[in-house]
Length: 423
Image (cartoon, rainbow, N blue to C red):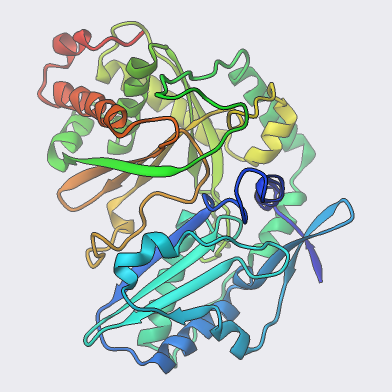
């Protein structure tokens, strides 16, 4: 049965179709989202397979292909036999050490499911790695998949509750009230009028058609210091970290009009347990005055965030079509920089530091910063395009962000930060 695709799925299919064997042999892999976790007990192979079969049967999106017929693109939910599902779940050795290599698999949209899974058995624990294409999942979906799989392992006889399927979300999305959409388009047209490209100083010249190779760099920041600053100024740690990132970009680029993107959760009570790409890309545009302090800039960014959240309802891919920005094949639409935040309650203490989600698979942005709130720190994990930036350049950029936070949290915000130029 052919079902309508979401706007997100349509973009994923188009990118794969355009870039396959043209920019990337076998297809691009930068939309592969890994989910890895450890099961802290001995689990038999049969139990593993049973849980995986139930998981794939529970969430239709895991059995979905995106196909084209004429000029139309559809999603088709398949009904494979259990034996076919088991073939998607392979036992491998040295999974922990080889996960970076393993996750770089290419997917054939029309001829296979966009999911591959692996596990490794040890004496007293097991490791699991799912590799899902971004056409199937968003970051929130990873939490659902992990919790469901662990429930199926630990309580195989207990039925999981109802979950709305992603195909139902896609049908709802296509039926959004045109009047409501036009109101949102009007807001964003005004907000993004005369939008400026965020020109970052790259170490190599940007090529005419955007290519991408991911690398990561990171630093950790003391949680008490950052949260204390946020509490004093009546804002959240999320806004503080976002503002420090934007100010770092302003310093790095010597620009004042800073346009980046973020992912906002669009789930409701109906879709709370739905696996699928429901998060929406939203544009964050802030203009900083010269010599702004971090506290000053937080006020601007907080206002930007709240306004964007109030107008997040239009699917990003539809917004791009409506605004129709100037085409530039060397860049992504509307912004080249992304910001993400994970609260402490979505980070589990049991995660193996070397075996967890590493801020990859969401697109080929020049810079993607994930701020993860841990027990004692905020981890700033920056994924970047190493074809354009050298590691030492990225380290220097992260140092700018850390210096901005240090100056502010040491209560020297008003005077000392003025030495950090924000144009």
